[in-house]
Length: 372
Image (cartoon, rainbow, N blue to C red; front, side, top):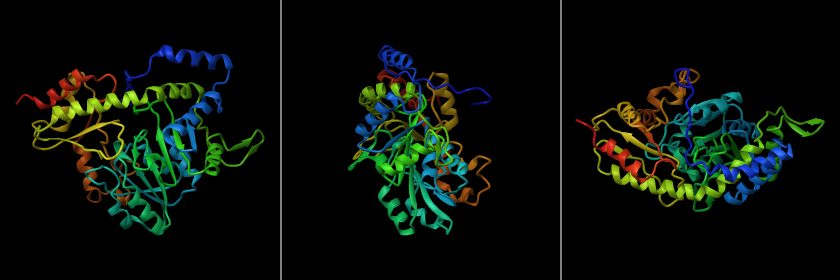
């Protein structure tokens, strides 16, 4: 919501509706709409095959996936995390009765800075919750080394990272557990949806109990679970989206190249770089609007909006600027200098199926040719 009004999410890159209609008819005819029906099972298997991760549990959305993942590991006490993320990252901790301890980011990757984690660890610390921001992989080796030294769990919020790989495969395989999101704003969408990538079959079974009210069978409840299941309609869309995913990524990669070329050498505009040695998903195109640029970040935001280009200030404000978190000791501005600076400068340009090469060139020109 913005000023009491809903923020609508446009997805011009959705697959053709006619390709989804037979699946919708099949669901309607089967009368099975949810509770791990046949489309849920097919989609879960398809994701496991695509990601190379054998234990994937589908969820109704990414936030519930994170809430359930934390619950499945019985995380308590304090968790070291980032202030530079969507607020759901911290909310999931609080909903589990956990205190977030915020640590500054690396200004080049916008991810949790491993060099600052150890100073934030206390006797109450039980885990590290890191975010692969914009799909840029965290330094998973450094984070795991710290976790092993202090006997901490590692949870990854991979909401942005579907389709991202490192040299060993999907980035979602790292940590004790990782979640991802299939929300309408994500590079891969099921309208609403998410998944938990579990380390083994036993953990996935516990997740399955927790996302279905704790039911082990019709008459047995083994845990205080929640309703976190994905429905059949979302699963059907996910199966269809998976067929088009590589095509979507190729298009985004091309638009990324066009935008970078158009913004090259623009004084005061810095395009964030991604590790080209890894497979990126081009889910976001963040730029930093520096002081040398003739407009402020917010002035540029309004200029582009007037011309029909709707950008996002991901992530502004910081999580630590919101009332539930700003009084925490770890939320003090002088502890989070890099996150605060990036938050004031960042603007994510639109990069999706509705932005073709011509529109990308116009967008770059609107940024490059600002009236003086």
